[in-house]
Length: 268
Image (cartoon, rainbow, N blue to C red; front, side):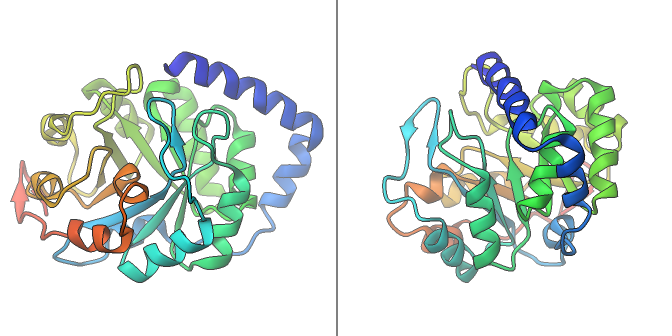
């Protein structure tokens, strides 16, 4: 499923550049207000697992997830419930997102915002900064090591953090080699969208001390959160589990379980 998504994204980027040229979006990006620390929010001392709560309207595998999708309501609710950061999916065609959702969330909350998209071009990092993002998602499996390094460097110049997502040991190696300091272990295989929490169990051993670790996808119950919290991860990213819940605030509090003290040489 990944290839058609990436092919469509390249077409979208080409069209956007015709409307707002790269030079113009770059200039705008460097004049934005200061960012809020995304990594700082994840590593802030706490005995409990941090929650990155996601604004996610739909998915390619399940279609519409939340028919009453309201950015203002959800963003405010996530902050009130104790989320440490908010992830905003901005891909429109496959996930029903938009950069305007990111801009709207910025008006509602003081929490750090992650722009979650399939980033393939520097243009997208500039536009994310202009829309109010404090961090961007970079998918190791969709980028060459050279591109990964380039995008991390650009984000740093814009005072943004990067959550570098990996699904295999080799992708983690690429992320570390490129200088990533926040690594997300995606329990979802983007080729077929199947989810398996065992991926975090298998891959956390490859992450060095000092790296912020996020486990992504598949969190529906307190038991799911406990399973990865015992490994010493810093945060979990939760999307479908929240937007499909009748009470997202209660679900966030349910998932804020106590972290494990130490595993595989990592501080919990």
